[in-house]
Image: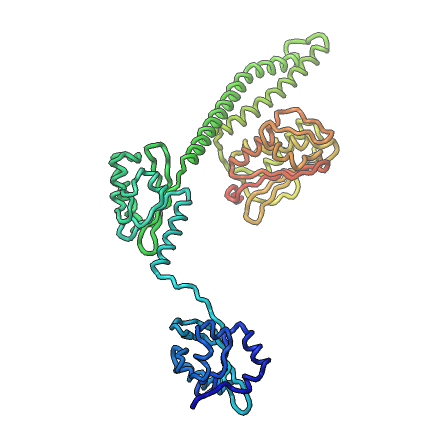
Length: 508
């Protein structure tokens, strides 16, 4: 039977105003048979109908729903819940065009009848993109990325045929686009390099150059250096891909190689200059020793007046001064000669097993005797049985004498000097020489360990000497596999520690 617009809806001006003002597509229809009672302006505009085309017609007659069965299912669910929200639907317009919408359906009680309120808004979907378009776009992005890098790039498939490469790769070897096109085999490119003489390869290695990437199929990744005819040097990092192909990243390392060569040449020059210096010092030391020994011998004879009195007492005083100065100069020359030998690698250890404690006591007696100091000036403290020492006894004695002489030189009269011997948890031998002298500023510790390194500490002037004692002691300790370290504080004193590895200790 014909259906007319619902009088209640048509007469309610407020409902009509809100209904037409909504930005959603809205319609009111009977729940069971779908006869349309009211639609708003947006519904008509979006779907392209006139109001007279719609009012009094069923959804089936209008063919709005693409699948009528879906509407029937929604009505059943709506009766159970009273509302269905966020429903994706496709509505067919008058011209047959489908509109994708997000819809909400509600029961609308009007009088004694439940009506269906339909509200929806159109969803704008992005146009679909084909797989082919995605592939083309991805490849274009990949090519742009490869062209932007400064390295050569080439990718081969599992059969060894080129998949893609960048312009830098072609430029390195002088390939044309046709020669380095997809599908060419990597061996053909290698043969082309040899034929054109584009790379510097010895004749007996030409085949290896062509076949070099075959090793990746069975072995681990490797780096490969290629020298181009134009003088450039390439570092090739070849890797096997998960699919069995090979990817190669090729970097121009020409400038890096030049820098390395320059550094190597500078190092060689420095070593040559250092050897020349050491040889000169050693030679000059020997040359100076001979006349000095003569001077010392003659002045000793004069001091002792072996052939009779000198006459005036001043002559005897002068002879003693000359002798003392000569002995001091000889000690300096001996230090220079020793450090020159160490630097030039001429010192070899004459190793033996000896009693280290007895050696320390002997050094103490020698230093106090030479300086005319009281015997208790240097105390041997905290002696732990570390067994016997295996090393060069003369050199170890020289190191200990240097440290004790330094401590005596920089410690005021009346202040004591301590030396101790112990072993650490690893069994290493530790010798410590401690004084209460002027000390060394922290920033100068490195300097005093360098050859000829002397510093002034506050009001304390640099003492006479070459400044080789600590440097030489450090070198001689290291010849035994040991270490020399210094802890010091200005005005409070210094502690020098010698550390020798456990293998230098032998059971007594």
